[in-house]
Image 1 (cartoon, rainbow, N blue to C red):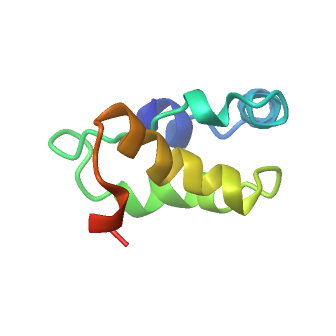
Image 2: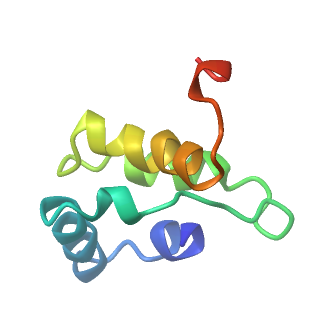
Length: 80
């Protein structure tokens, strides 16, 4: 998904991401990046979501953190 997010900056892709957020799908998006292949693009990938004006701060936290904690059954307090 990360490659998809940062590598497609056209209007259509922004519309998809905006729609996902508006329809409540943020809880279904797990942020990931393959640093072995795309090393050096972590900041670019993160900034695409971080600068998405159409996502709330809560939605960004869900995508970047909460979903991974839930998916991997982690203790969130260990990362705070």
